[in-house]
Length: 360
Image (cartoon, rainbow, N blue to C red; front, side, top):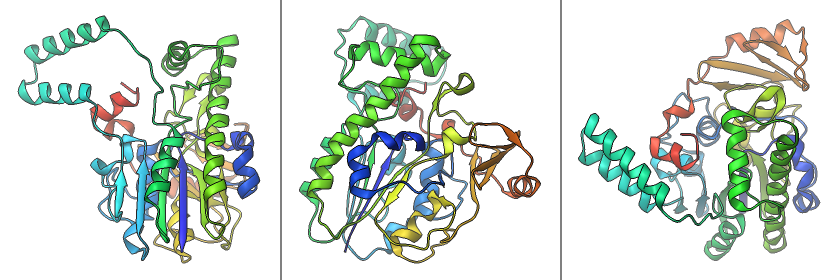
């Protein structure tokens, strides 16, 4: 048996329409699939443990239950072996620690916290600014991941590929901007917000990232054996200027939680699918808190929780439809209040990894 799980960072539901090759191969997305968190650090522990765990690190995984050889390739440091994601995989690769990060780590270990360390850190930052810059793609390209996977795949396998193309900063190949300019305007949107023409530029960069990623995925769909069971989904969504928000802050609403979910696996689909159901779908049996025929999905960020059903999201501020218009739905609000959030926030990650992703 061959099973492929492709997770795509920061892919919101309404942009699956730009993945023409994937749509042609797998068909339309399930209309109501929701992430369990607004960011990678919160979603993946639920996916791999099949539980609404309160830890951003995992010690066990549904992958351990699989009988076939297992392959994991991730392009996000937050789902690396540092956080336990190599558990159950026979072959696993993740982003290597950069030379620059290694230098900073060794300085941090050698010097005590305080004035001396802070002075050295400032001098090193000044030194970096004086160095010639050669801007490259922000994250590893999908075609590189696909090539590595094809080289390592045998006759039978379960494989997980995590792709980072749509994650900010958005810097696609086809754009009127230089790579520097694209990254700069993307980072400005995340940090301070942009409006008008600049907002349109950032939205177009995000869209183009998805189009280019899908073009690279076409080679995978042309190569993959016909009997392969496949899931393609997002780990969370992305704000693109709605109400002034960009990226994936801890806001529990349509744009950050509604994700694509396309598959050729037959399972008893209910009105709602949650990312916590992925192990059940892969294993063809309900696993831990996973459900077939689900009616309600749950999500959280830090100490905030959400309950989702019938296209409505209940969060601490009320109950909202997909356009974030408030509606009355007392039963869903009660479910939201009863759900205990994970407490996980981005700050729980290792500082070095947050720096690499551009959060600090």
